Length: 114
Length: 110
Image 1: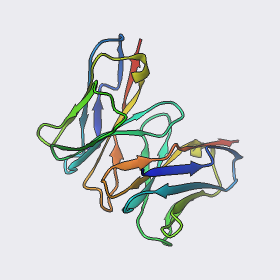
Image 2: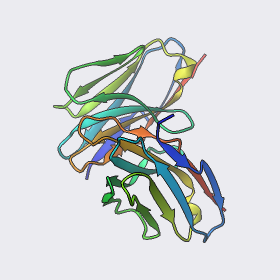
Image 3: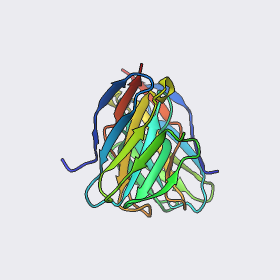
Image 4: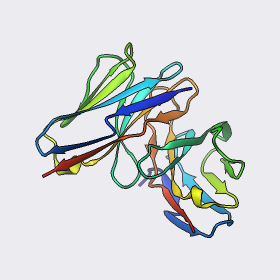
């Protein structure tokens, strides 16, 4: 399967701990997006990359959140000092570019902060 | 600020009914509109629309875009229980990020 891959699928952590998620996009895709989704809501934009460059980060995103895509391939999303409000599904998507192209999603990482 | 609004937020129908889901948008320099289906996991891609008035069709699902009025509709004919899901509309604007609406939850009863 050469689709978008996310790891881990589930993560339970104690409040105050740091967590890191990984996303491997479809190999020829140079755009990579991170979203957060809570129950009953559509995916909320967090940040996106064009190759290794982070082009935009949501204004709503706390400084506790950081994302990297060091070699323009896989990406990591780190949440420091987790809070219960961080509990959500974290989705990664990739696309070739944003002009007339589809974006495909991974299966997501479900984070539960206890 | 760019935004995407879907309606209705939820819908309950019976098998065999036809449904129409709506998506309106306000986006700087519209590029494309995408529809996704989400069933308790990650969204799966349905359609991408870039031109007004051209219907995209896949089986019982079809979609059309009106760039003048800034909206799209997703039609599902002869609904089945397997169509029960959240349907998401998303738009690419000039900034290059994909903005989602809040989704329409469709429940199809036997």
